[in-house]
Amino acid sequence: MQKFDIFVLFAVFQEMMGPVLWVLLFVALAGLSAAGFVLWHEGGLSSSRLLTSELIGLAGGFGALALMAWVTVSGFTDAGGPVDWLLIGVIWGTGLAGTTILAYGVLGLIKVAGDALA
Amino acid sequence: MHRDDNHPADGPFVLNRRQILGWGTSGAALALMGGLTAPFARAQEGPVNTKARIVIAGAGAAGLSAAAQLSRRLNGATITLVDARKAHYYQPGFTLVAAGLKPKTYTVSSTAKYVPQGVEWIEEQVAEFDPEANMVVTQTGRKIPYDYLIVASGLALDYAAIEGMDVGRIGRDGLGSHYHGPDAASATWQALSTFADTGGVGLFLRPATEMKCAGAPLKYTFIADDVLRTRGTRGKAEIHYAAQNNALFSVPIVSEKVRMLFRDRDINAHYDHVMKAIDLGRKVATFKTPGGDQEIPYDFINVVPPMRAVPAVRDSALAWQEGPFAADGWIEVDKASLRHRRFPNIWAVGDTAGVPKGKTAASVKWQVPVAVEHLVATVADRPCTAAYNGYTSCPMITRLGRAMLVEFDYDNNLLPSFPGVVAPLEELWVTWVMKTIALKPTYVAMIRGQA
Image (cartoon, rainbow over all chains, first blue to last red; front, top):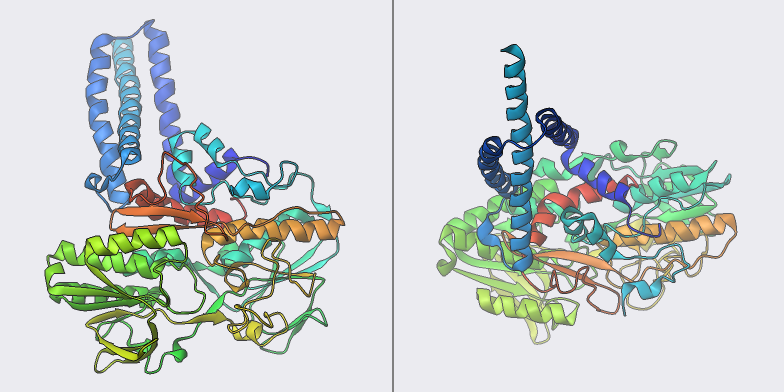
């Protein structure tokens, strides 16, 4: 093997999360697809829905941090250096961004479905 | 010397850990455990056709990893694993079990789960190696001939060398020994927890022999200190660490760091103390020191026994005949190629290999691809430049929630994966995260030949 291989990373993640990996990938894909569909359907961003989604996303960021603390049997007071704070930021940011996109897609689909039924 | 120096650019393995940064933080974090980007057995060219008979003695981490890689690299070979052990232990997890953070089941799985398809598994122990006749003999007398042999038979914990030691009493009367296995690791936690409620004298040590995961006795000392602090009983306790020589760790710069941490945590270091006996009733351990035997009373002790090659190896012609590895029977291999120095169709990987350092899962991760590459090249009759430089890593837990990622080679050079980002002697949460959630998946991927 000449260089790092993404299959190694994938194999490790598969061992780490088992079936949950596929669930997460599905949710991520579904969220992106839903958000993309809503954007396409509405022809632009809805600022009020984006704000709501971001507020939900904030909670998602903290949820990601809580999940990480739980699985690692540790707390964020254990952060000991800049790279720790960077990782905490990345975890929080990932949770925020992921939840925001998912929330925007789900809320948008509800709106689209509601309009269709109206 | 950087690790890459041992791997010429046109060789089979060019290691460039920094490239992993390109995969983002998750990939970078995974690499911190040491060895994610290690050479692994995804063949660069097609499998080599051969009718060779390959025997792998030992189905632990090294043996299973070698079997998985060889089964992919060779087409038509007869690959046979020989090991009686039905249970597979994830040994790096013993420390977490003994810290009360994981159940003992966390470390237990079955060997059968990892035996690669097409590899025969003979569920017997190798009782004799006969390298002149190119065969191994099992405990039932079954003779298994081979063209090539990989010895991955692990090591033996020599509790009998400690006078008065009784492994049946681990978990009682302040006796711990988390190396002995999952049950003992769990029982050690019970003993430590009881000690942490009351305080007293905690005694920690390591043997004078080569040992697997030489950082674990230190980790457990730090863990005990942290548990006592969490329980509010640190002020009622003394912690003593007995080092077998005049250092706390074989890598000088790490030893100094540990010395400073010991001073910071009020842990008393005793040098040149080698445990020789224990009185379980009186709760007294006896150490051999330059000034004569010394007794140290304890309320809790974590016994780490001497470690040696398994008897079948020790009593065979495979063992070193002279030098520092001869006394305990480690296998005489070239430290770069891991090929036997007198029997060129034999390699040794993992704990049993008579090389400096290198008795960790991270070592296995780096050793096995090198040995496999040499074996495959020999089968294919082509030259091989793969070399193991002694790389190993130790996520040194310094308190619950923090660890130092210590990576080094044969020459005691530190080999940080991300210089300037993750300092090797810095206590970090990110290293703890790797130890708790990423190390085991990577280990499992390794023994499946996927990483």
